[in-house]
Length: 122
Image (cartoon, rainbow, N blue to C red):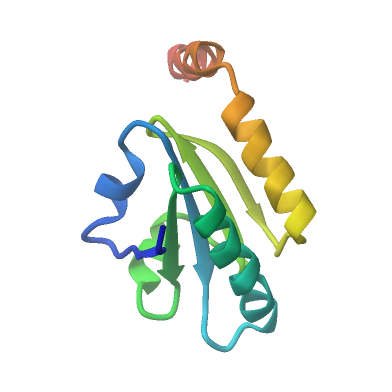
């Protein structure tokens, strides 16, 4: 599956649905971003059931600020509309595949319960 570009107009609709969405926040001038791009693209071809989205932080500075992206590349992973991962730094291919496996293996009922508990405490 080809990657999709996300902007402030389509970010929420891209990440809120069922399934897994992986967002790569990047910029054209970022060397580590350019080195990670082929890893991200290859994974998008191998995992057609996952939405792979790219967020150009330079062209979407307002959204990047709202998401509190402080370093790039930053990977954000959403499953069933819940953010389950957010980390700056490029991952090597094996680590990226491991992350995808971990997200697939999540017990989403337990995750939803944790989110609900955090809401009730806050």
